[in-house]
Amino acid sequence: MIRVLRASIAVIVIVASAGGVAGQSAVPEVAFDASADFLKLPADLYLGEAAGVATNSKGHLFVYTRTGNPTVGLGNSRLFSHGGSRLFEFDQNGAYVREIGQGLYAELVAQAVRVDAQDNVWIVDAGSNQVVKFGPDGRVQMILGRKPESISIRPATDDPTAPARGRGGLPGAGGDGDQFSRPSDVAWDAESNIFVADGLGSNSRIAKFDQNGRFLMSWGARGSDAGQLNAPRSLAIDANGNVYVADQGNKRIQVFDKAGTVKSQITNIGVPTALCISRGSHPYLYSAHTGDAYGMDDAAIYRIELDGRVVGKLGAAGKELKQFGLVNALDCRGDDRLFVGELANWRVQKLTLHAGPR
Image 1: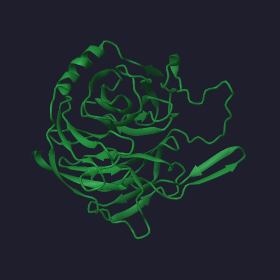
Image 2: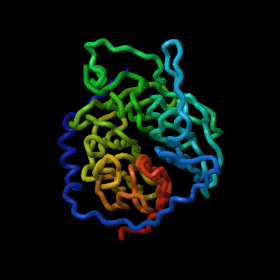
Image 3: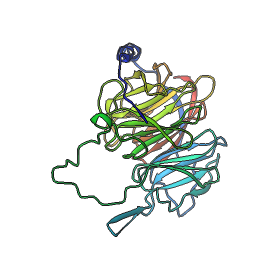
Image 4: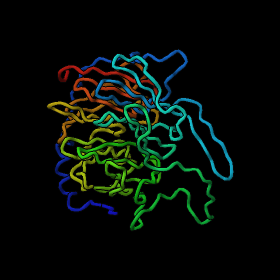
């Protein structure tokens, strides 16, 4: 097992590459239309916080939402909890198709949903500390992580607020493998390697697994230096295998190669909470920004070239159409379409982007 923690001389490269972003003045507004009533739920179903949104190759939309009936049972010093989040599928027209994994042991606190190149659906659950892969038929294919159950009593000398320490005693580095602490996102490279952002709890790292779920390596530790992370919130991987990490606590996007070597950073994009990379001949990186705790004072979605240049901006904070409240998920499979999952507004917005800046 290998742990990679690399900040090295790439710090010099980072400062230079970020200069183009920092030197920009006003960011052009991108014209777009929005809809928030396109999903047709059955009469007895409701969306809660839309923590995850993702589309497959057919245009079907998957929404991982914090709603349901959470249940906790205590027996033999073990705490069992389930419910509290549900995974819904809608067709390309917004019609309800089905619920996937109803009552599943891992569905507790929805954090993200993603769809891979084979149309497998993956959920990331911050409550169960698990990443679950469903096949296109909705059956469970793989589980990463293990749900915490046992009740432990810490010694009086143990600080329960102290961050986890991995190899070398580095805070937030986590342990080798898939023992996650509130994971936040999942992504894949062209070789189907699996990358998991593990950073909303005591860890602050990116964990890498092969396509069969075998742990390969991880990188990162809590901090603000190059290569360090503070609450890595979202992931995106481009066609060249570069890994983009929404480093929320440090108000930046860090770019790594697939071995964990830091390459550059993108700043002046506010506080990044969700990422996606569009497909097609000219891919863009989209990054959602939320600048206050409730998402009602400062919010936007930035359009960014893959070299880090910010070239457009969409929307503002609020509760109306074209406004955003605590964006937690972005899907941009289509070149001119974004699906936006909001926590504060309990909804998914479908954005249709116009041809160029307004």
